[in-house]
Length: 412
Image (cartoon, rainbow, N blue to C red; front, side, top):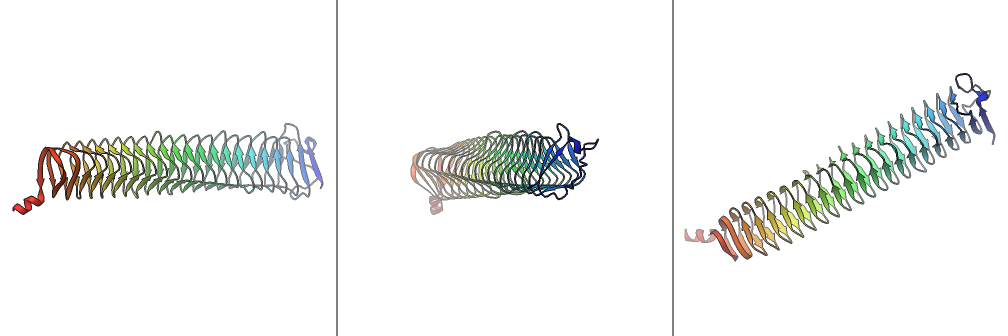
């Protein structure tokens, strides 16, 4: 294959190529060595082989190679940059007013900027600066921005990890075959999906989609989703809250420095549920560990815990409350169904159940205790007011006044 060598002698006074060979459709390789000078082209460049330059290359049109494109400086084009092989800028950045497409890796010492898409069909995308695109960013392997952020007006899809020194921002979706790891925020107008972990030093926000991880989800700031938040592993917000307009589901612990709010679905955890503020769910709250809240706990459905249920505020449930340990609230406890505890039940306010109250230990209330059915207790019952039920099946009222409504009805 023919190899055309371009030297500084082939440039005019303004640094533009003025050699005798038409490079708009060149059959062969192109090698450029113009020293420290830019090599500029007034037209598109097309080579059936590789394009290699020791310095920077600039084209007023497209840059197309059927081989690879390799530059020791910048690669800039007012059109598309396309290569069947890799694209590499070892001493500068890659910038295109159109799209950037490669059959191999796309690697840059500086920023990668595209006015269209960025696509690597057979490799990864790596920049020591930032990666920015007005269209989609697609990689068969990794996407890595070690010195800046990753921003796309379209979607971001990777067959491997997506890692960024700064923010990761998508105008559509973010989809990774590996981890998603950001030194800043992670924000997407659509779904955020990862086959691995999702980690952010800032917040994680999906404004019009869901968040799904086959690993864990971890954020220093808020985790917010217009849809469901699902994790095979943990969900952890060490400096913010967790909020979903759908449901929240985790195979491990759910930990929040602030609130946990699932307004459109339930909250389910394969471990503990811990909140420094409140826990609120439009559906059920289910935990295979403990449920702890420094605020209130409120559920539109049932509350079920294999371990303890502790709240520094009220505990309210639209259905039953069931605990494999103690149930304890600094405020009141209110249930639309039964209240069942393997341990004791303790409330700083009223305890109110439309069904049974069943405790494997004592029952303590700073206010009234009211059951729409029966009360069962293996310990003492202490109330700051009335103890009202159809009938006390077991236990002894140590303080408060017992009112059995079945007996009252029979007397009447």
